[in-house]
Structure formats: C-alpha cells, structure tokens
Amino acid sequence: MKPTEGNQRIGIPAYFTSHAWVEARFDKADLFETKQGRLMFRAMEPLLRVFGFLGPAVRLHNEYLFVRHYAQEARLRQIRPTCIVEIGAGLSPRGIAFASADPDLRYIEVDLPNMVAAKRRALGGFPYPPNYFLGTVDLLAEDFSKTLPEMPRPGDRVAVVTEGVTDYFNMPEKRKAFRNIHSLLLAHGGGRYLLDIYARENFPQLPFLTNTFIRTLGRMVGRSFDDQLFERVADARRFLVGCGFDEAHELDLAELNTSAYQPPLGECTYRIVEAKVGEEG
Image (cartoon, rainbow, N blue to C red; front, side, top):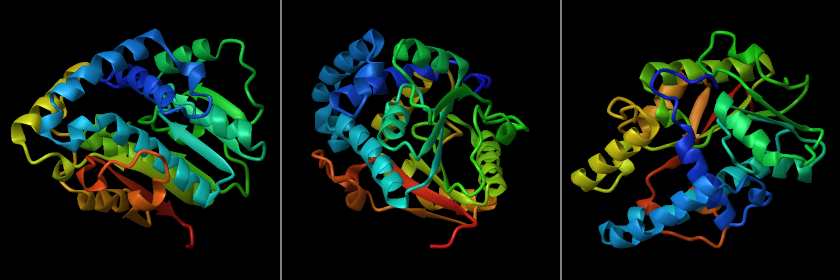
C-alpha cells in the first residue's frame, strides 16, 4: 500500500511482530527475523512484566498476539480458499509458509513499498514458490482491485486477509478500504474477508491504561487513534455490511485457537470478524 498521510511509520509494529512469529515458532518465521524486531521484542518483555498487575491484556500481550495469528491461519485452513490476498502482510511468514505447503494455493501479498522492500531484502536468495506473489498496492486507490501484482483466476475461491491493519485507518479510510475489498471479492465471484477488530469495549476497564496505550501506539505509527477505533464489535460488523458485504460475523476464538497458548480469551482486546460477499454457507 502507498503510505497515506500520517501513516508512513506503520512499519514499526511490523518489525515487532516479525520477531513475535519467530518466538512462537511459526513456519518460515526465521526468514524474517530482524535486529530491529528482536530488540523491540526484548525491550517490551520487562515492561509487560512490570505492568502485568494491570491484567492479562498487558501481562499476556504476546500470547494474545500469537493467538491472533494462529486463529487467522486456522480459519483459512477451515475455509480452504484457492487464492488468498493478504493486504498489509508486513514481515509475516504466512504467505511463504502457506504457498510452500500447498502448490495448488495461490498466495498474493501486498503492503507499503518500504515493507515490501524490507521483505524482499529479508528473503534474499530464498527461492519464492511459484504460487507466491509479492508486490505493492494502494488499498485506498480508486483502481485498487486492478493493481494487484497477480489476480485471482476464474473459479478461484478467494479469501482476503488483513491482520493488524485496518485499525490504523480513520473511519473514511476504513470505508474506502472495505469497499475496495468488497469490490475485489465481488469481481471474482465472491469470497470471504478476515480481519481483526480492536473495539474500545474490549480494552481493560481502566481509562488511564487504555488512553495511555492508544496514545503510545499513535506516536509509534505517526497518527492519532482518537477517531479510528470502533466502540463495539457490533458497530464494525454493521459498518462492513454498510460497505457492501452481505454479512459479517464474529468468529469463535476459543474454537480457532488450538495452539499451546491459552490466555483467557475473555480479556482479549481484539476479535476476529469474517465478512462475506456472495457466498453460501
């Protein structure tokens, strides 16, 4: 994606999560380990311990992060798309891992130019699977659905994924992004869209902690979150339907999390939502 105003530094969380996937031993994560990510992850660990008394959302922050990734992957395996488009993929190993494991799956990853360049540097001489495609695209552009580095083929069962992406957009940007994703799916016969939602209702009931966290994250990525988070997950679901999706529902995290990480999901600050276009079942 081309950087939007105030959003040029979105790569900072991507480096942190690149090392998180290494820590959780996701397949192919070692390809994307960086010094920046390792230092950021190590620096965060003592802070999480010091402020862990504030509750599981702080103390078990990294476990919740791992579960988010596991849950997205588990749902993708359940619905078995033949083409996955991941927007804002950062340094996630998912695309390379999925494409390497299933030659019949076509995996298309796009992100900001600086992140795509970083990912290509990290991959170095690693041989890309022929069914893996990496490129830049502007999610907020009018011609978004025509500018992917590769297109779904006729008859593909398409799934679009964003993880840790759309809550960096304000509401008008969200509307544009969701409508563009809807149009992409509609143009290719329908499909599903998986995303995470950090609604204010799911943050700890500690106003100072919540506001401090949101302000700190805003400084990291270079823009304010004051007008970017939905109050409730139900609001996000209605918003998605208003952007053209036929329906949007919250997935069961407990069902999707079969990992070794079992933090109390009632304290989780995000929910995984699946929106559909033109699909039965």
